[in-house]
Length: 313
Length: 318
Image 1 (tube, chains in turn yellow, green):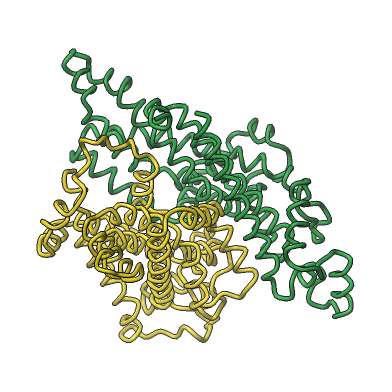
Image 2 (cartoon, one colour):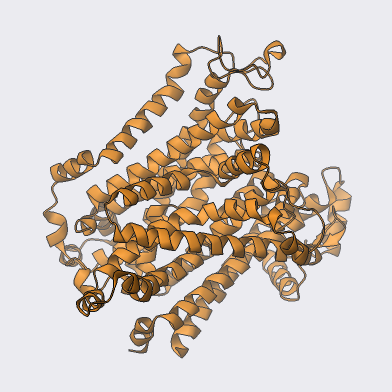
């Protein structure tokens, strides 16, 4: 779970945290005065968030366009040039079978980014729909749906991923599916809470009065209005997914070779910690941290821009 | 109190039921089912048939599920054919060590995280606030194993203050006597929750600082230090209690990675080894126990929260 989830979730769980006089007035007042240009301005004025967005774009370019410019052989091992120190032809040295580390970080980043974005998108879609349906349905359906979420939340993610990775050999699409399978829970909870608030709004009543079906209400009224919450959470989801991929690869259960990821580079590099081959460990580690921090900061900035409730802070 | 407690326990029971369905389902998702998992890839069709018949795996799924539940209720979590030991006895050996590790790390995280958060709230938007916020983001984005590697590199390899590997024998008490081995694993695991705790106690302390009773205390002329220790600390700690419940799963997951990194013989390492050898009874048994521990943990946390905060009690009594 990320910062965002934690803060948002805890607000749901401890309703007394914000005393009534601190709470914004419900209803259209707080949301409708927010024009999209204001949101952009808030976001662009937030220097850490714009910097984070720039970092995300740069890292993506580095990983996907980088290999076209900085060409390295990431397929054939080169046992004549193993663990050579940074410098000369290899700005970041070579690893224990002779792959160029800089080029390897580019290639390894591709899978991290693909899985991170894919899993976050899938989890967000599943979670939002689940939460909106549960919130609108109410009653026993709602309770049952949310108990499923509670139960899955109490299975530690790393443990679940470990078990699944032993059952099925991991690949990029599979990892997207599996990580999404554990990540949709938080958006489900958030969107449900948002739905509970939204479904009491007059325009939802009006839609029902005009004969709208529940599906129409979910897709046209509830989800678009919960979009701020959803987008913010999605950004944190990407950060988390990148970390999960790294965990799995580090534990030796990531995408199998010849594919490569930052986590698996680290887990190989660890063996050389005591030999002082720092370039086998820290560059890959730094890459993970930079990208996941960038997505967290981005999410934080998006929340400031999209969540009118935080305006007073 | 009564109604809330009953409802909360009811919820926990439903959650437990769903968790068992998931672990039961995973057992049957195995390629070839439980028989293949236990007998191995070279078992013949006849052997598998025989195994299924003797162990009741040929019966309808609902019947099997009820059998599974009754086994679990009687404390039978399966048998590790690889280690030739029952899963329960493996757990009895390993669980206390993991609990010690997680409890100590939580303590460290709270002792560091809460004061830092309060300092940030008091000096809001000041230099210290920005520095700690940045640090929290970086710490949050750092995977546990990387944090562990940094600590090992600094304190284990270069400075050699603390050993980078846990002792493989002995029980919990011997671990406590030999406290130096615990330092690096505990601080690494504390990193999992530290960033969030800081963040969280900062925002709840900001809420508390805006309350009328703080203004009253100031108006009475209470010194700042007293206001912080008497009012802010106590009230800002409350939401942290909720966080503990939410973070138990992450903590167990983190413990797995930390135990792997330091070769710390706890439940996480047991699980990792089971994943390496495809020891499914252990994998699923441990998953079940960890999840149950989480459910119970968050139940206890919620009830404690209920007891700690009179405002909730009033609301529930309405």
